[in-house]
Length: 185
Ligand code: IMP
Ligand code: MG
Image 1 (cartoon, rainbow, N blue to C red):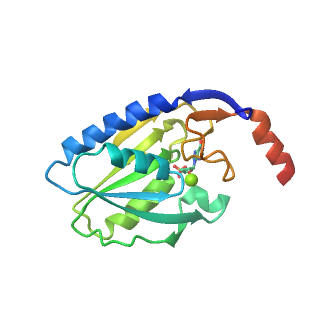
Image 2: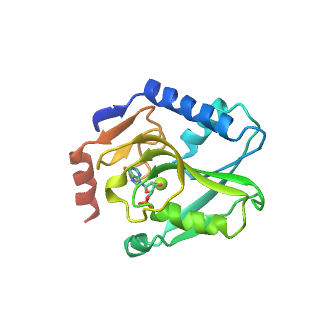
Image 3: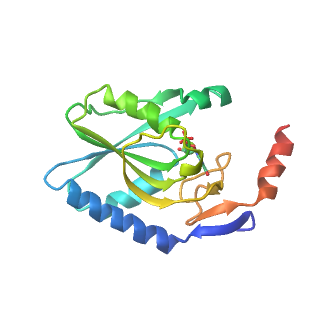
């Protein structure tokens, strides 16, 4: 892919790590039926692959959000476009995320979910970029990979809605980022 500077994680590396996490979840939640909740659209690839590696009964559900622009991003205030279909009261909930960056989005979602009194509530994130973290106290129970301070795409992660379908996770070329900045300004 000509727009990619460097591949951070190959398809095989991702699959192997996802399987390890699935095994941990199967073990940790044995005897229960956790509800995996994911945010559209970035985490969908991770959630569907992960779900196939889990050997206990699970259910999953989706939410969709949008942020209120850059000022609101700083406060982590997002608008809910699609709420869950299911009730989560008394359920063991696992919030499945593509990437935790500042942590503000996850923090907002956790507050929203916590208010509905689940039996338990934890985060499972594929990528963790702690460098830019603003909200420190997040209940991250499972993390696929920790990454350096680089913008990544692929395996569900997008840049302006593109590159989600790449089977690997890679770093976008600086020229691609600059090009679209020029187009926008
Ligand atoms: P946070 O609220 O700063 O933690 O932002 C998390 C959200 O920002 C993720 O769910 C992604 O949708 C998006 N995001 C953050 N970093 C990246 C990246 O490197 N590539 C693609 N999307 C990203
Ligand atoms: Mg996203």
